Length: 202
Ligand SMILES: [Zn+2]
Image 1 (cartoon, rainbow, N blue to C red):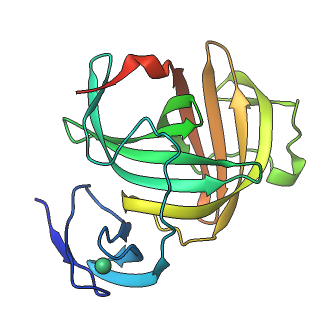
Image 2 (cartoon, rainbow, N blue to C red):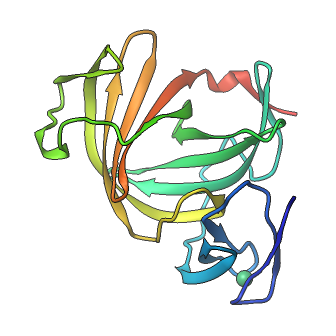
């Protein structure tokens, strides 16, 4: 059942669209709120996410092959030389996942494993290899991401300007893994690169 939340900053009514949002950005006043047991905690204004031409718009419906989905949240990370967007998307059947957009590169992502046991971030070397689920993956990037803005609803708590370390791994058949070294543990996401021209608005 969708819930309604009232923005404590401006009184705007926000209709919850995801299963268990932990971060909600008010579309009226752009205040970022962390959500705990239905209580909203103001953690500051979110930067307005300016759109260099973006493939997605919030709440529109898109199709990739047989999969229909709508963006319901978005978080932007700065990685030093630029930024990328993680779109939190909801499928027709209610399933929620992520689509990552870095300039023209789009990958559909899914959480593979929480609490993965991998070497410490400091020990990772670009150009080295790691075994993830018995697949040999090459380390192609090692970096720090800083949250610089958000929209809509997100399933985790993150505050503006918070950073985390990550590594990108590339394996066979265009399969990519990202390992995030978050405060509450290490998360591994599997991404599949898709042709942007195969994603259409419906
Ligand atoms: Zn508001």
